[in-house]
Length: 183
Image 1 (cartoon, one colour):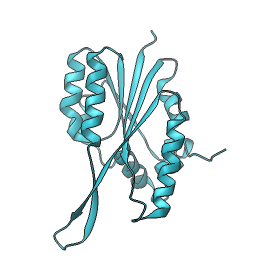
Image 2 (tube, rainbow, N blue to C red; image 1 turned 45 degrees about the horizontal axis):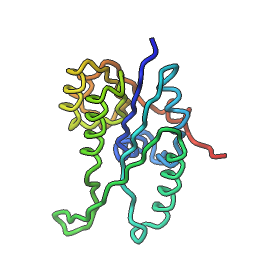
Image 3 (cartoon, rainbow, N blue to C red; image 1 turned 180 degrees about the horizontal axis):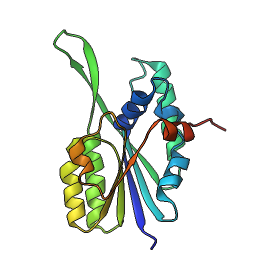
């Protein structure tokens, strides 16, 4: 039976997962198009939502440029919506500045719950290991939808895995298989 599938990508979590496998791996070198085709198979892809935030150009122009190239490449994937959230400056207890992404989790959750209640998918694929999504998945499953989670070994909340109908580990072999080599 062919199912309608929507994919929800927590971009910051994905980047962190890739670098946990190998510090040289990066989301800017990942072939999302082929990975999506691999995950969806013969099912009907309805929509892809990718949530992340740009590093500020003045903070790191090289990373900013690579991210811009990645987001442009993602926007060229049919049915892919890139949502860029904001970065907020924070200070740690030593007074050192760091940045957090604000809004990505809530926008991802809103996209998924809206699609669920509008019956746009039979199966939702969440690419994240963030335990904050546990209650979201519970509500989506209560509406009779299937949940698949794609995750990395480091950074997965086990409670999240227990909510899934299917789980798919992104390991070194998968990362290598879908390493983007450009055109």
